[in-house]
Image 1: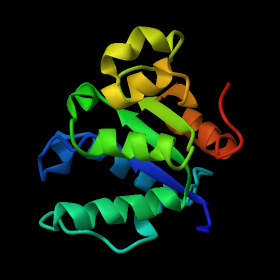
Image 2: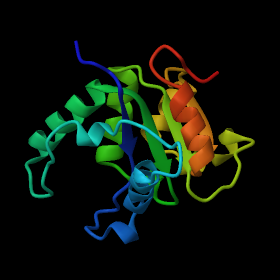
Image 3: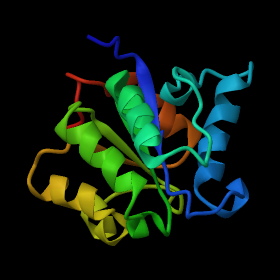
Length: 165
């Protein structure tokens, strides 16, 4: 059995190699927060636990790598931006596998809000894979703004077996 200590981060890459034009920029922000020595933002990045996969890798090779990373994770951060709901490829796969096969709690981090008081009012931003699992009560999700302090707090609390209410 895999040692589940990583945080898997999912985001919509918007089919662009330029990280400044997609939600990849938020993933990179999380990595920057982690390496700064003057703060306590910490997580084990599941994407760094396995070999990298090139953009031109075959789809099945990429899928196997994502599955391995998810299997070694204790939680998932789903970065939700304005276009995340449009992803029909990897984000829905990652959500489905994380919930259906790994029972990972999802930390939904919204890039365009400073506080989240009524998550159901944001359901138009959810990928269908997430909306379906919230509706059928198979997803354990906490909804937070994409900010360092709420993310650090959620990462320290939510893992397999310790789900958001």
